[in-house]
Amino acid sequence: MARLPEAAIFLVATVNTDAEEAVWDFLSGITGLIRSVASRVPDSRLRCVVGIGSDVWDRLFTGPRPARLAPFIALQGAVHTAPATDGDLLFHIRARTMDACFEMATQITNALQGAVTVVDEVHGFRLFDMRSMVGFVDGTENPAGPAAERAVTVRPDDDPDFAGGSYVLIQKYLHNMTAWNAAGTDEQERVFGRTKWDNIEMDDDTKPSNSHTALTVIEDDNGEQVQIMRDNMPFGRVGQDEFGTYFLGYSAGPEVTDEMLRNMFIGKPEGNYDRLLDFSTAVTGSRYFAPTIDFLDDPPALPAVDNETNEPETITTDVDPSMGSLRIGDLSRRRQLTTEEK
Image (tube, rainbow, N blue to C red):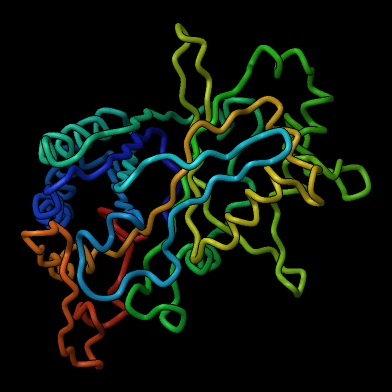
């Protein structure tokens, strides 16, 4: 997996009515666009991951869809809420420098002008030694090496048509920094379940059950941690007193992030919610599937539209099972959308 970037832009867009063909055309050529922009700034390590939402998937593609792709459902806890907000397309643009991100975002929005509506745009930056806006090291639990690939990519035996892709959950959080700073370091550490400066996790006897780490570390039936890849970024506008964290989690399936959020917002047990939410408010939430380069370079056909109902027609075709429904070749060639191999 690639190292976390120094700069990022997150674009979330909805697809306008009758704009499916324009969006399909754009997505089928986006890998070439990324290469073109990256060639102008070769040291930037520019990457762009494309996520496609559940509601728009069948408007853009015939054939099967990712097995576990579904809309994000809002969570209403006794105290805090994780909202579900609009989003058909996610463009996660990453680079060593913001100029490369900005150019990529400009090219995307220019090409899709009139076809999509950008409903959220966030410019993120890396803060000091990988710290979040609230001062704690972020991404400590991220897997590395082969474990990272296992954590974020769909396996061939799980969903062969979409092996190599990832499920992506995004949330934008705004922090009450006045209240957070007033809490003091000792209380902040109890909120996180981790020391602030040297990033040491508290032992189970010391860590509060409603601390962030206690509720977001998920284990399977064998007691092994089920991991995701976080690519969170701080963002903000000091003149507007806006200080935030853009949460972005890649996973091989949506179940682990769903459980994390239930623990955080509903509580484990119910009512024992994540104390960090007393200082951090989620204002967006949506889920996507990020397909491979091969899928985007050779996507399934655009659905035919019934001119009277303006709804996609259901089309069935005979496909050689040995080729897979996407007909994009050997699964070993599938890879995430990036300008260099991970």
